[in-house]
Length: 163
Ligand code: MG
Image (cartoon, rainbow, N blue to C red; front, top):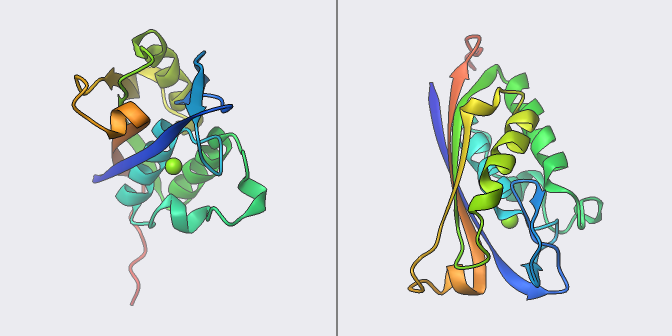
């Protein structure tokens, strides 16, 4: 078994959509970024890559690449899932925590978990998404939205050792 952690944060800004865990949430402000700025999906991808020892999404999808401008992050997650599976891993479980002062995200977390599980090719019960505030103590969770993710990968076949 291999464990990985991911963290991401994006700034809130007017004129942008708010997409978290692949779910669009009605809000006056959205997240700024090169892609759709889905911090939850980005944290999840970094946790997957971390567990598999494959670097991070900044290396895989540099923000200088015009092909990923405003891209749906679920499309990037599909690529990461495929990469991780191609290396002989399957997802044991994933746990995502979104840190935001507003808007209230709890009505959407179950749907996010279902969407992310589908893109990870695992049953819904293997993905958990939760949301918390920082009780107005955090600048990051007031001016932006942050997300943490932890992933457990299982090796489905032994990797070939480099000689
Ligand atoms: Mg990001």
